[in-house]
Length: 357
Image (cartoon, rainbow, N blue to C red; front, top):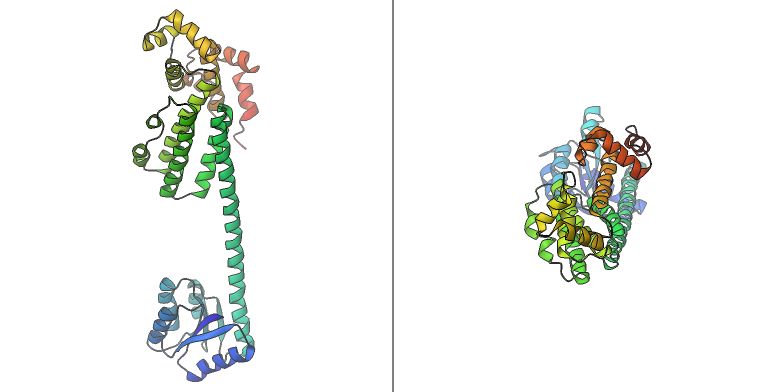
C-alpha cells in the first residue's frame, strides 16, 4: 500500500478524498490528514508519505510553501495540488517545485484516479531508469573484473604487451565507475597494490616500496594527478615485465632501461651509460645485447620511433616530434622514421590522425 497524506482546510474535502480512495479500491492508505499548512508540514515530517494531496489556499502556511519546505526533508514524497483557484501563476510555481499534478475542485473520482495514475507512471519510469542504470553498473563492474584478471594473467605470464593494453582499459573503466576523486584514488590504489604483489611473487628481487606508495598517492590532489601517479606505477611494472620478457634480470640493465625510457630525447651515448653504471663501454655493449636481445643503438632508435608515433597520433607537427624524441636534424629524423616504418612521418600522421574525427 502507498502511504498518502491529505491537507485541506475543508473537512468535507479531506473526508471526500478518503471515501473516493476507498470506493475506487486504489492501493493507497491515508496515514494522516491536516487542516492547515503548519499542521500539514508536521504530519509530512512524521509520516514521510509516498504522496501528499494538498490545497493551495490553506491557513497557517500555504500549500506551495508546505511543498517547498517538505521537499528538502522528504525528497522522495510526491505532491499533487488541488485548488478552486485555477490560476496560471499557482500552476506555474507548482511546476517549479516538482509537483506531479494539478487538479481543480471539485475533486472527482476521475480526476483523483488520473492524477494518482500519473504519479505511479512516474514511479515506474524512475524504477525502470534505476534498474537500467544498475544493470549498466553491474556490467561495468564485471568488465572491470575481467580486465583485472587479464592484468594479473599478463604479469604471471610475463606478457608486457598484454599488460600495456590492460593498463589502458583498467584506467578508463575505473574512471567511469568512480567519478568521485576519493573513490577513484581508493580503488586505483587497491588495484596497484594487488598488481605489485603479483609482480613481486613472480620476480622476487622486486621490492614493493619501489613500486607503489600510499603516501605518494595521498599527495595527489586531482583526478589527473591520481591518474598520472597510477600510470607511473603501471609503467614501472611494465618495465619489469619488459626486462623479464627479454631475459634480463640484471639489475644494471633494468636501471638503464628505466633511465632510457625517461631520457630517450637526450643525446645519450653508450659511453655515457657505461660511465653511469661504472662499466667499460665494450663490456656494457656486450651485456646490453645479451640481456635485451638487441644492440643499444637499435633499442634507442626503436624507443624513439615508438614515442614519435604516439606524438604524431596526438597531433604534434613533424618538426616538433623530431625535437621531442631527440633528433635535432629534421631530415635525419624523417629518413630514420621512413626506414623504420616504411613511410614518412607526414604519411604516417595522415593515416592515423584526423583533426575532424
